[in-house]
Image (cartoon, rainbow, N blue to C red; front, side):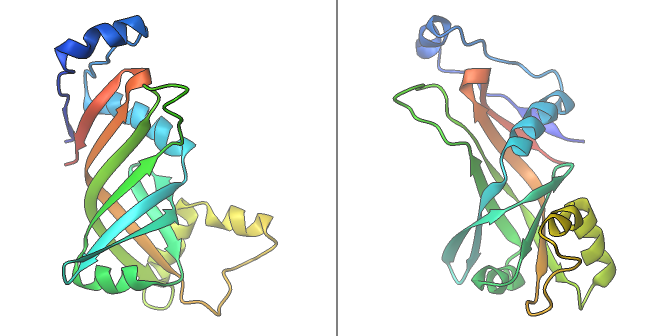
Length: 182
């Protein structure tokens, strides 16, 4: 069962929030928070995936698709797979664009930590096709005039199950709420 950690906002800064008519939210349950989190995640589509091998971190911007709170990424290659072979622990961030000159309190984003696994069509066709369905990739391919992925590439699915997500959206009253999975 998922849990939440909701830190207190610095009391000295509360008058600034009041001036901006920002009311901090206190989530009654992890489910209530997940609804707010999913709304944000569905508005975005790019995460920055961080992997690590031999004490050398790597960060890669990638398009993602969601199924619940599981993240799916379709990729044809890169050093991230070498890293994932030796270290399944990943971190990623997702941020919405904002201009602090227009709205100082408008930053929205998250950082997440979890485990990643990857698989391809050749080694695990059933799981690969199931992931493409969950990603609604077949609809995207159809719009592009394709019936299947081009066979010239060794496409792989990266599947990330987050263990912890820290999300902030102060304009909406969400102050660094941390969701911790099962």
